Length: 467
Ligand code: FAD
Ligand code: NAD
Image (tube, rainbow, N blue to C red; front, side, top):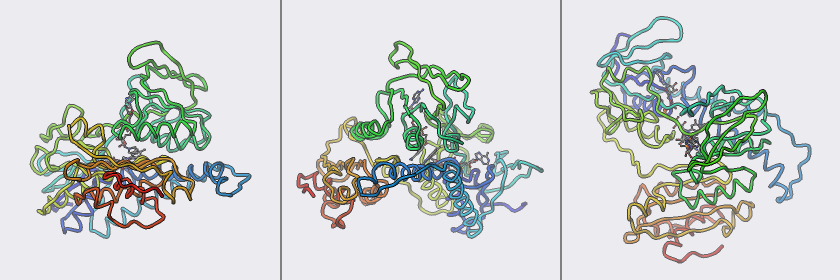
């Protein structure tokens, strides 16, 4: 361990592990320091993957009992084996984290288990869970330490009854009732999981709308769909406290604008009001790495203010998404290797994996209006898409926003079944700076859900055709 590394990465999540693998491919001598027992970070261990495993399984469970009837499938004696569902989730996570370890070996990335800290220029001290500290010498350091749950003042998470997303991914039994604080991505996804499995779920949100950041029209229609499924919403409400009673939790809230206190009771309360950068104990100040007032590491093309120290992923500004971290990890490794490196921050898709799914890329109507950009709009509902009709999955629509003069696509917003798989086409089109007419004149296979995107693009010039 006395050799000098080209690169030492602190953090083995999607930012760190993609950076490490790309650096290995480019021939750099690279080590990735991860304090957790497994690689993969939040995403693989307690984020994207376990949540998607439970979303998939719980949706199948609900469909057997509900929508499959309309397809002529009769099911009786269907029951939930929650332990098995959780075991299946764990098996998926295990397989994928081991896959990263395999990719590290394949690309000559050294995996070091321990907590990393910058102790001087080009010095990373490693503290393992057991045993002696060591110090690595390196030309470059990449900080990829991710994020942690934003706490709600006065509410202490115990991961049993008062849970964060991590606890909500591993509840040992289905609660009779659950209150979710925060109608963002985690609240809607994990609220959906437990509602489908039998919990009575209501969501308390500070703002007067769900999903801030998503297009307003999509958010409105999505809320209607979730309401029809039985999810309750208390919008524009501020939580003032959660009291632990013997068996129940008593949540107090009042209107954000001020007003009388209201009380909700639940077996489990899920706190998901956002995440904040995690940079504790890294020695940032001593190393001269600047953070903004919210604690995010400030970067310019992934370089911090301190020479040879870079930062990527959730611990820096921008959307807290695995694919954003991955893009930055790859680009940062390429920049360190002296290659041209680029991330197109205008084309990072967002997806909410509920049913219906919600997906978007580019700017919302609200953002375009605020920026004073003149735009044209085409929309198409899934009720008029033949594949959606055949599948009995007609909730939702696709909306294409294009520049009023040049026709360049500025944003695409979708709600419907499988739109997580459809948004890639819109992202690719935007990456190539396509016009809406380019999608409108591209032959799409019939019958597919993606024809709805084409029809919405045709709608920009007013020539949408029904079915
Ligand atoms: P992380 O994945 O958080 O990894 C950081 C790693 O650094 C961790 O493993 C941590 O242990 C390690 N670390 C920290 N400090 C040190 C240190 N000093 N020394 C050594 N190691 C250290 N995003 C999506 O795009 N799609 C989704 O579907 C999605 N679902 C999500 C669901 C949930 C419930 C949650 C919580 C998040 C979800 N996200 C999703 C967000 C996604 O998980 C993050 O954006 C992504 O993991 C960020 O990657 P990262 O590499 O920046 O950080
Ligand atoms: P979020 O930012 O998506 O939503 C938090 C919600 O809580 C917002 O609607 C906000 O207005 C509300 N809120 C904030 N303070 C509140 C308060 N005191 N009382 C009531 N409501 C309050 O955050 P999240 O859902 O916790 O997710 C964290 C991060 O994880 C997000 O940045 C997201 O990108 C990422 N994530 C992504 C996915 C995905 O891509 N599918 C899934 C899960 C998580």
